[in-house]
Image (cartoon, rainbow, N blue to C red; front, top):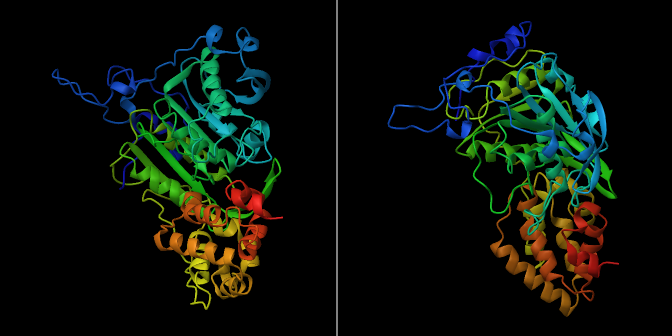
Length: 479
């Protein structure tokens, strides 16, 4: 799939014309005022939009008296940091940037901070003021540690909790309407963006608010565990997936949960291929030239131009060519083909004299070591279990450890269970791709404190705080 970025009405926002005026052109009568009607064709000969210039500027209806918390009903949010914003039983903060011209509805960008940041610090790091200079109203709320799987934003949801109430999503909904009540927001040009933990939240919001949004930029964000259940077909969106390159890794702690060497390239691939496969979504992806775990701020002006070239109702799906070109000094390469990623690790466990040891270790190899998300995150634990060599691809130590430790009748029962799970396992990439292993450990080692093999692998897994909540059995049987 390839598509063209049309910029006729927004030519002043392209990289080639950044010196022009930033005023958005309002097109009269070329398309319905509501993008939900833009694709309708009636007997009168009315047709859908012919390009971004045919999507009009329309103010998002909002009333501070009903859409703002009490402290913001009579007082408009100010530029800079705003505090005391009460929503969902919490006091929240957010940073606001305003463009010079507020005489007509302006595009809105909501930006989500990463781990260890807040709205002001992320705004400075990602240079979000660049978007205000291009005509955007920019809102950057501060996270509040509401997440459970990763305690920053409430964006990673385990099975069964995907559709539970979400205080961070309530904050997003409230801020969009409240800001629009005080400052004119263009309903056809509302976008989200975020990096790292903020990129995770961006994936979460894009999949739940596609009727409102025109698009967004999930940057170095996990895609796993961000989808609603069941997944919702997305309304027209334009999505730019970014990551820093092969060395885009993160090690850190949030709310007592730690992760080591987490690599975001695999998750970028999951996001890219997902959005590209959606019938109504135009997707491009930008890979940094191995700049690490970074927001690609050198592309901000290009990002702004691309977002504005894709208002609500014009995702660019199915149009050829990528234009305008990425700036030569951007330290990134952008493509319109989905990023499929590369699988470079292959684990092949040798046969064993103990029935089930080979199959158990092969399951760990297939679902964890070969998993670009899980393998790096569990590297220390997988090494302790017995995997070794480059990328832990050598399985011999795991089989040998199993043969030494699996000596009881409880071990034999556990290994028989693992053998059954491995025979039918369909491992894949991403956190969900490791579920066959997670399910096997939780089932086969359940209650087996008398299994030295189960206790040994669970003792190592339990040391990883980000894995503990997935491997519930290990918390029960390991010391």
